[in-house]
Image (cartoon, rainbow, N blue to C red; front, side, top):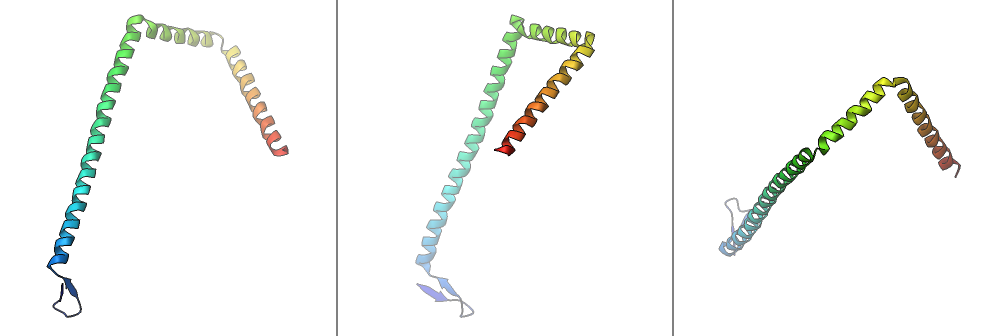
Length: 116
């Protein structure tokens, strides 16, 4: 059922139509709330997983320190740095040769791509 509005040109819904609209709105609202709760739950799960990963990483680093592997890696890096400092000219020459070889390879590949 519908009735005429105050201005005569608008038709207002009747009681049944209003009830149906209220039911639809409640259902839609319920779905929206469920989606928000689900989204909040997934956010919490992500934070929990991140916390577990942090704990796992901390335990792995702790094991490396206990085993002395972390210190040996640092020692190896220090030895390489010392060797590079003492032989700078050779290191620069080796880096230049490597860079030239990589550029030549890249140039050859580019020419082959255009010729085909």
